[in-house]
Image 1: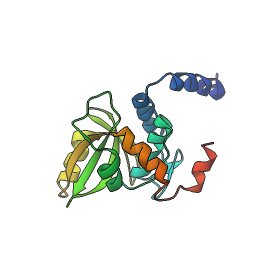
Image 2: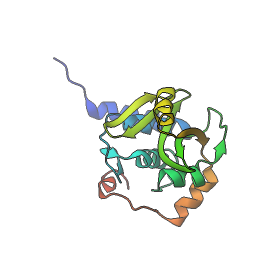
Image 3: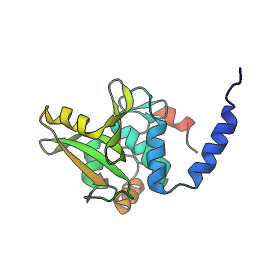
Image 4: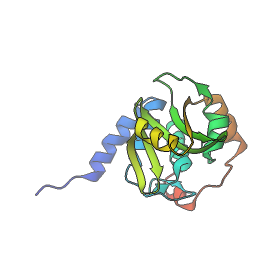
Length: 169
């Protein structure tokens, strides 16, 4: 039986990643987290919470390292309303004016949702319905790159988990 040569696979992945747009890199890194367990307060390929998954994908796509909450991402970083498909996008679930959950948008109808049970690709309409039944609305927002750069210059807001250091320079 033949085995997979993981080093060769990952060398190819690295070449493909280097040729992607920022939006494609964001989506790729969201999907790389598929199957990872939910770990509150973390942001690394081994596990993360909802905002950690989005912050990690933003870092991989843009080189801008931030760590903050879903609500802060909603109010300060993902402020472009009605974004087109070519922009980095996220979905926010809002109750009483506060974004309590965030998921990275993979395409118009699909998200990477990091929640209890682990990171899974989910149908946006179905997840929105679940939140709607609990009194939350849904907002799709696009990345304001200048706001991301500004926040990154201010420094990491919530602290990085120590596992992330194994994955970044």
